[in-house]
Length: 298
Image 1 (cartoon, one colour):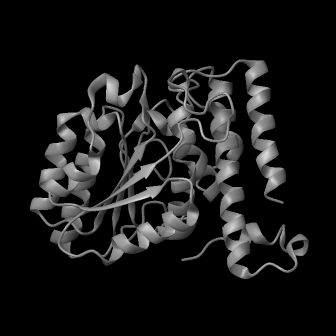
Image 2 (cartoon, rainbow, N blue to C red):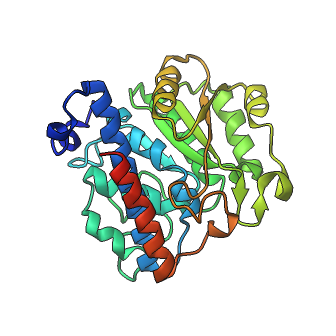
C-alpha cells in the first residue's frame, strides 16, 4: 500500500507543476533524509554506535517501509505482515529511525539510543522494540532466521514475504552461505535478501580483509536470482523489489552498491566511521550536510 500522501501534504502547494509520481519520489527522498537525520541524532546522543553502514541503507529501508512492505504501526504483530530482518544488526540506528518515522514509536525516542532502560539498544531486540521482527547482532544469524521465517510461510501457506539486509563484510561468514544453500534448496521465492555492498568493514576494504567477491556469481552458483543496483537510486530500488516479487522457485538477492556514510561529507567512504559517534563539532557538520540535502529537495 502506498504511504507517501502524508508526506506530500506539507509540500504540495510548493510543488505546483510536478506530477504525482514526481511528488511521490520527492516525498521518499525527503523521508530517507529524515531517516538519516535520525541516525545521526541517535548515534550522537548515545556517544557510540554505527553510523556508516546505517546511512548506507537508509534509502532501501525507506522504500521498504514506506512503499513496499505490508506493515502496520498500529498492529506490529499482525500475523499477515511482511517480515524484515536486519541481519547486520549493528546498524540498528537505521532500523530504529525508519521505524520511528513510520510511526512505530516517537521520533524523539531516537535520542535514547543505547541508554539504560531504553527500548533502543545497540542491536535490535524483538522483545523490546515495536516493529522489530528478529533479534540480531551476531553476523550470519539474521539471514538464517529469515530463511526460517520464509520456510514457515511456505509450510503454513501464508502470503507474507520476508526481507533481510546483510552487510558485505557479513558475507565473509560461512553461515551466510549455509543459509544461501538452505534457501535455494527449499525454493524460498518469498525471501528477498539485500546485500549492502559499501565495500568497507571496520578493519578496511572488504577485498583486503577477507575478499568475499564476486557476490553475484556466488549467489547464482548457490541457486539464487540476482539483481544488481545502485543503492541510492529510488527508481532502481523500486524496480528491483518489483522484479523480486515475480521470481518463482528460488530466492532473490539484491546486490546494492552503496556509499558508506551516505549523506555526511566526512563519513562517506571512510571505514573509520563504521563504529564511532561524532563529537559536537562534527555532529554539527553532519546536521548541516543533511540540512543542505533537505534544502535541495524543496
